Every structure is written in structure tokens, then in C-alpha cells.
Length: 302
Image (tube, rainbow, N blue to C red; front, side, top):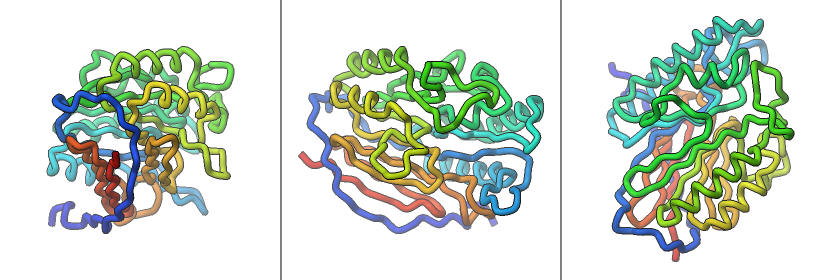
């Protein structure tokens, strides 16, 4: 029996999303489908007592997800960070092996693939080492933050794995709660969105930018500065995030923030989490969830 026979799509929940009107060139917009998964935390280790992260099972969970993405022929497939993890006693060589293994499975998707950097992607290794071993479609060498276009949409990937003073995360020497988008990246973001003002934009980032919940541990500390850029440029439709394994949804200044649940949580394929985002030519947003991820439809209103 093929793996797809075990897939469970949750029932849809419909909600309204009011997105500010922008002078997009609608003639260039085509429907697009995007495959999403986050927080695989792959490592060949078993969870410690009381830990709900089943690291070793993430390869099978990713394999199931890749099969679904290939069946649905999504336009591209992106993972939202914490792609790999490390051993209890960290070892650089073994961590790099985990990264190679999970990247190999990820690249079985028959189309463009993209990466977002998470905090655990800097455990045991440097940002440079990580980027040398992964591939982002259309780029000769993977970058930690970048942008690209497809079907009339503009996509932006951010890297919040920096400390307050701008020092990048490196080899485990960081506090995962000390997370910032540095000034040079903010300047790049403003210019990038400005240059693509006629295109509806989708932003991908690992840590959360919607810092309106009481628990601030999973949020980017200068999220308000990033959201100010979105508000000024007026062309961001939604932000897709990981990091907070529970998942979440918020709307701030008419931008939708969706946090996908973690794939690593729970044992067995029945505890997998992944989704397909569809955006149509009218900019309606539909998230089809698989396994423990719920489906949602968000309708743009004028």
C-alpha cells in the first residue's frame, strides 16, 4: 500500500482576511501552489524522556510530504527552517551528515526547492557550512536571505538568526531567544519590496514576526521594524513562519501571518504536519493541511 493512502486532510475552516488594496499588475498574476513544511529537526537520535520530538522519524515524514507535493505538482516546495538537528553530544561531522541526508530527501521533489534558515540549522555548524550543502532553485549558491519571482508573485526569504548586535548565529554559540533581523537586511528588504511594488509579495521566515501573543519567546525581537517596512511598502500579502511548534494565525495591519505546525512533533506518520498553499488570480489564499495541519481558506475583501 502506498504511503499516500495514509494521508489525512483535515476539514476546512473558512475565515475572512482583509488585505489592503495595492496597484498590482493583475494581468501578470497566475494561480500558484506552494508546498510547505517546517521544523523537521532531523537527526539520527531518539527523544529523551519527556521530549515529544521524534528526530529520527523526520526522514519518513519528509518522504511522505515529498510524495504528496509531487502528486499535486506544486509550483515549488519550501521548508521554513530547523531542517536538521544534532546529537545530545554535538559532533560537527555527524551534524553535517544529518544535513546531507535530509537535503537528499528534500530534493526528491520534482521541482524548485527553497530553504529558510532556522536557529537549529546553526547547531554544531556555521551558516556558511549550512549554505554550502543546500540548494535554492535559481541560485548558483544558496543565500541566507534572498528573493525570487514566479507566476507574477514576488517571494522574499528572511534570515532572523542574528543577535542584537548583528552577530550571526554560529556553531551553537547563541541564545535562540535573541533573534533579530539586522539593519543591513532591513535596508535590503525595504529596497527589494520597493522595486517589486507592482507584484503581490509573500514572505518566508523561521521565527515569528507577529509578536502580539503573551509568550514572546518565539518572536523576532525587532519584529515591529520589519512590519513597519511591510506597512510602508504596502505589497505584502502574507508571512509564512515556523519555529513555534504549536502553529498560529494572526492578522496585523492587513497582513496575514500563518505559523505552520512542526513536523518533528509526535511519533508516526499520523503526527506529521505539512500543507499546500494556493493563491488564485484574485489573491484568495487557501491552505490545504495534511495530517495534523488544519485547512483554511482566507478570502481577500475589497
